[in-house]
Image 1: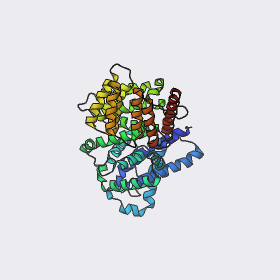
Image 2: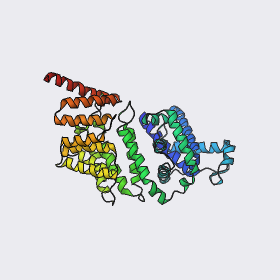
Image 3: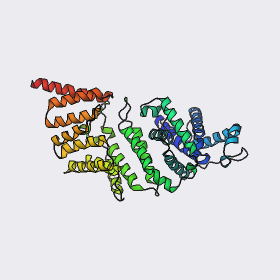
Image 4: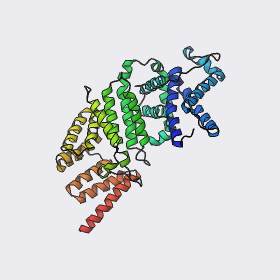
Length: 414
């Protein structure tokens, strides 16, 4: 069987998370490093074997069988480990180590892993690092690039996180329904942050990392299939991700330049994802609570339409969102809706109250408001401020292009 190289890479990513989750399910979260080592050895053996013999007809079954064999080899040769491991996890070399890799077991193990790594003892960055590594199969290099840091920093974070998980190892085997409920908000927050990191990456060299968006959406859809979890917030998050992901292809030009929302080619928007967003938004409305995900999804929905009262609705949604979860960025985005729905002067007053110094988005927003007023001199002043604080190449190029265009126009008028 032949597989394109990118499909093999995706197979490894998917099976990495499956194998680690199942092995930890059987042998305890305290043995997470052992599980990762066994899976890494399995992939190394696959690369060597498949390069000579070709990819087997059932590559997933091959990987799972080899992983179990690797585990057997470990127990045979590592007497020290066998003596230290708890009796309930111990299997003598005379017994067969049988790990039944059924889809039901894989799904249950993945679900447990999602909630265990969102333990309250772990910090937000540790949650994200473990999610990318254990749920998405990202390498340490990929995580470091995604989070704009070094490999050493990621390794240290994951080492500390694993130490904390070992202290709470019982929670992986005996995760109660109440613990799922108490941690669902943390899990959704991690998926939300993971999607946002892909949609607008903090990485200076890469504005958009669509693979992070798709992983966040995949995991959210997986959560939505667990009937015992509260579905309303999950549906709201899926709706938001679907609306946002529908514009991924339109956010970059062929030469890699970032394209602002107003300039995007709407024919490139993914209509199927917009429809999916509408379906999940409707499903989310059947719940009794209104979360930030519901409100942000509704705002994203209105951005896909040209219906009357569009900006009035968006403004009202931003007003509600600020009462649910205030943030300066949300308040900043609200001012643009305020300009569209009410008046630019009112929006400028609200924007200047925020005083988000050293934030290039803030200065770009004020420049846009002055553009709406037709005040090119003020627009130019604030674009120059934005240029001082922007760091990404594409952002610098976009702002510089606007500045040069304005300067030409002003020169022609003088």
